[in-house]
Image (cartoon, rainbow, N blue to C red; front, side, top):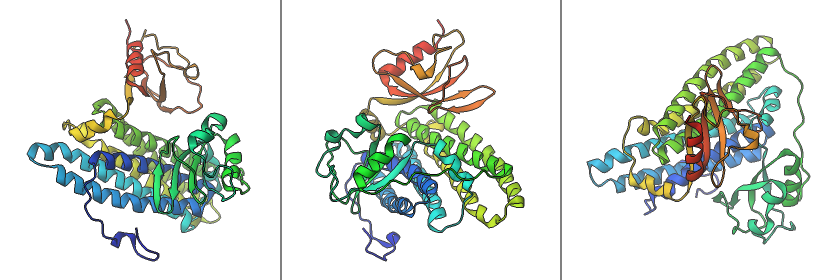
Length: 403
């Protein structure tokens, strides 16, 4: 790791005999966490969270170099080279996501300025995420996450831990909390404050609603929040398309990228319109930076899935990554007259065995519907993006087809 004051890009990174599969999985987890952290930094105007983004960005730089080294070592013949080319696309896409997240964090660190309307809209865009440092006298010190069982009791989960310069992403029940650990916690708004205070020993400062903004600015902010949500979905689908060699998912990534491009164009027009009425147009500079970074994320998602779109066979190293998890992402077309038509998603999709969660719908004539707490009913011709076990997904696919 770099010493204090040292440029992290100048630190020598040597080849280590690590699994390409393991590096890819870590890059995937890191890039997804980076997006969440970056926008949380904007929401809270938090220099501390923004600094965590830059630390993770440095980690991603090292992962990218090691992944490229490992890919070169794995290529033994022309066939290997062809199948590993898409893996380099994944590596390059993940690095672009990391850079874009760093640009978002710098909006906060460089105090570029953001309209209050941006902070008003972001809480609706994702579940709250906080950074809490474990206090030395906290009752959680020395306990494992399994013993604490925070998620069952409060709905709040620990999604990352930084101990010094070492990161643990997606910690499991066996991982123990130590005084000084920097934890990243996510959960419902009504519970996250109490958990934050329990871990850190500090008072929780909730986000206050800002004053209303001008019309064009409201539209620009709504547009960028929608771009953020679509770009995050595109990243999720892009990784899924590679891991499961699924052309249908890759096509949806392309659809999402086209929609984000269209939103970006409208966002620019509305931001320019808002500048005419703003007391301080320079304060919109941060908003423009957010728009550029968010659109870059959707472009990176398309780069990740490019090998699948070009019908290049997946390398065995990617298949190994798939076998570690039974959970899959799927694109399911709902046929008119099928048993899924009219199903209320809040009541859940009927499946055999463990359930499947529908995370998004692409609806003809409407576009994308991103599901969180939305109350939606499945309609004929809907394209569902679902996440669940292979068995449950096969069951949903059968229900979606008319008899």
